[in-house]
Image (tube, rainbow, N blue to C red; front, side, top):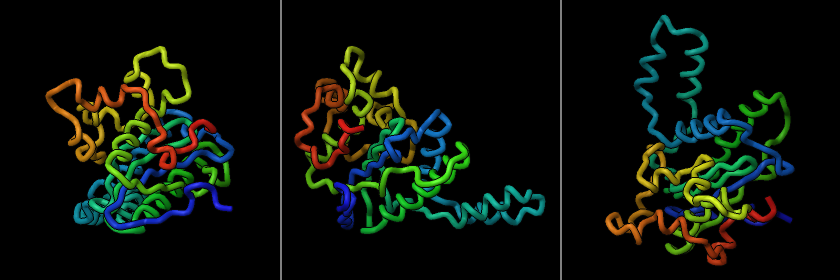
Length: 234
């Protein structure tokens, strides 16, 4: 029987919670390099690809074989600029969360297959291992209301504190893992993350109605329980 949320129903212009974790719950991000490589891959897929510039570089007769091979791979690589919009993300040591809007049905599958395969190849080479990195195919759940969409961003950003008794500053703990939270708090880090649709629901002038206050609040995840990963089993 397929695992929960492994059967995916895709629709044009829809939002999805995408998540996956390591096989046997193993660590898939061992250090800052692993996190950065994963995010760099995401950026390369979501930022515009300047093919004319790459082709000009390729015509340089002084180009080394390694640089030429890299440019050819970039030219051949899938690109999802303006087709896939990343709304929010959080990377944890043994799993990840992405909140994505796709323009056309089926694009998420191409994006996730490209990202998953590429990162697995990197990870296996670095850590001298073979075989699958993830527990199963990635999971994808369609978001069906604005309320679910808002609360899911909070769930994603609060992921670092979901399994601990919080005696510390909420934002500090939330920001302890790579995530898009800094974008939501006005500290731009990733030009390929787009929080605008979510932030439109919050006040820019009234601090009591800000996204920061919203994400600090203790969540009741009943509203999104079928949209969220089984975090208690992680």
